[in-house]
Image 1 (cartoon, rainbow, N blue to C red):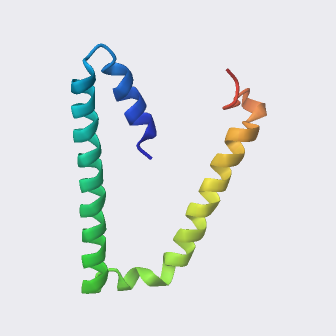
Image 2: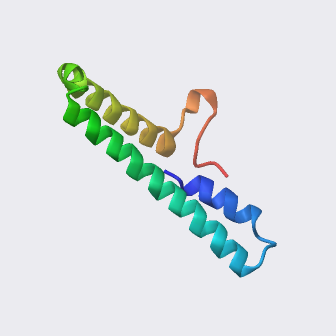
Length: 91
């Protein structure tokens, strides 16, 4: 999920020394991993406290909707929307 951000930031640090780029990447990835770990901790604590029990009834529908969205995004990438003249694979 962070690939685009990393690429953009890596291109912006092209004129720096290797040590500066290494430190930048180290701090970026440490922050990213820490953020994901804390979000996982918060989700785990919410489940353990029973906060999410009321959402179980419609979780399967949310899961289905998210998967359909991923499929539609994949189809859009491959096929594009020809009627609008949009294709994600066009150069």
